[in-house]
Amino acid sequence: MFAAIGAAVDDQTDAQQFMFPVTIPLILSYIVSINVIINGDPNGPLAFWLSMIPFTSPIAMVMRLPFGVPLWQLLLSAALLVGGFMFTTWVASRIYRVGVLMYGKKVNYRELSRWMFYKG
Image (cartoon, rainbow, N blue to C red; front, side, top):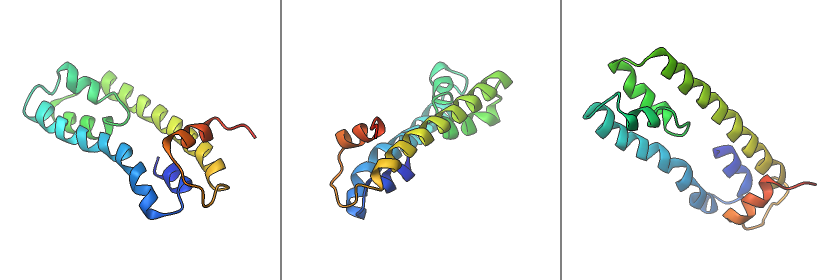
């Protein structure tokens, strides 16, 4: 996702508006994981789903490991993380393909969504 942002903008100040949606899942997963996994139930439903969603699983699953995680949950989390990585790489490549050629153009979220499905 950071590569897509880097390809879409040509100014560091423009990049700041796109950094927030990428970093907020990481920050929220850390805060929620501390409250739910360490101080609460590490095998509860919220801890399970946090460790399965690709944007939150790197933090949540690592926090759950010391409490004992079934092997199938670990493998499912890893498979979903790899699938999420491949999907975000595909999205970043679509944005990069168009974004490199659009030097100097102001970018917004609508424009980025057009770039993902641009045929040309």
